[in-house]
Amino acid sequence: MPQSADKVLDHSKLFFEPEYKEMLANKKATFECGHSAETLAQIGDWTASWEYREKNLAREALTINPAKACQPVGAVFAAQGYEGTLPFVHGSQGCVAYYRSHLSRHFKEPSAAVSSSMTEDAAVFGGLTNMVEGLANAYALYKPKMIAVSTTCMAEVIGDDLNSFILKAKEAESVPMDFPVPFAHTPAFVGSHVDGYDNTQKGILSMFWADATRVANDSLNIIPGFDGYAVANNREIKRLLDTMGVDFTFLSDVSEVYDTPSDGHYRMYAGGTKLEDAKAAVNAKATLSMQEWCSPKTMEYVATTGQDTAVFNYPMGVSATDSFLMKVSELTGKAIPDSIKLERGRLVDAIADSQAYLHGKTFSIFGDPDFVLGMAKFIMEMGGEPVHCLATNGSKKWAEQMKAVLAASPFGKQGQVWAGKDLWHMRSFLMTEPTDFLIGSSYGKYLERDTGIPLIRLTFPIFDRHHHHRFPTWGYQGGLTVLVKILDAIFVKADARAGDWGKTDISFDLTR
Image (cartoon, rainbow, N blue to C red; front, side):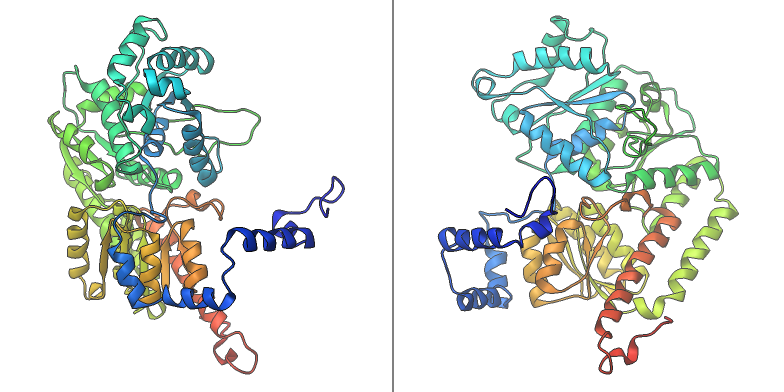
């Protein structure tokens, strides 16, 4: 064999060795129906046709590569944003391993979460025993300040009652009676990670605020939503609010959780919103959600406390950041300082400097509803044209909002909105109505390979590139990050088309 202790090959080289080539060829002949290369090419060409697109759009019983994760991923993420909080997922170990790995692979940091380790017996008799023992073990071993409970498919299918189970666990002294154990039902077979985030935020706030007497003050609450760029985006919003002199509380802040230093100390509970601050947040003048479609239930609950509320859609670019800052100024009476106005002017100047290369470029966008909406707005602001806007977890109501955004700009006239569609649908769209670029997550790389359309990675999850999440995409500074990523893709594509000596290199410019 080519692999030995003295000769360790990376997998990308290992599978090109003769032994593995033979093994893979045998596997293909035995298990993959043995179709000829001509037949495969014929079918491949057909899947790029309008005829196949119509059949693809007509399918109802199958989802292929949805651009979303399941509810508990969002629940774990939301819980991790609170001080000393351990996410506890009532379900199997395998499910929770997926949630942890999904977050860890994106942020390149450990993701702490535990499960109640439900197995076949719990599926038959219920998971009460698992909850009682699991909470006791989690409390004793990991010494959290709060344990936030959510559920998986198994617990939801058999109908486990979290409220009852937690009360019985406290009666059994698994945790002290006054120990905070908020919960949310997050069935993974419906909704997506944004719903899990929303359900958990509401569960945590309703636990803290249920019996509180509100004494209004002038502070603001910020709910960031599920965001793969939260490390940098949360810090950027905090910087802007600090510059304006605004008193604020982030409700679920993972910016320290997913950006811990390497200094010899493992931090299971780094940063996060202090529990006392979360309790006191009921007194805020207003709560602002940075992602409307990540927080509908939470914001509905917040409104019952008497607070003002406002929602935004991923504040990326000039106009979206303008709307956020003007609302903050309106609510607090704080003026937007000249230093922030200068940042705005610099972003506008940067867009103007590059306008000739941005104008008329076409884009396909996929991801969460707020990201797609915010990204499309910024694309049009720069003179680009969004053509395919796809959110697997987008609703009909979101689709109508998206269509209105596209209709408000001449650059949105080509725009098509695809709510509830998946990335195999997107493949058909790109094959039949190709765009210049594709914007989304790492899962778009398969579309890039099939269609030749360059992928720009700007949303969760990003597995095959490192540290993008450390640079903001929100605010005026974040807008510069996004602008540069898009321009780099434009220039790389231009260079690739002008790379043949004596043929196409007349436009292989050194200065652009």
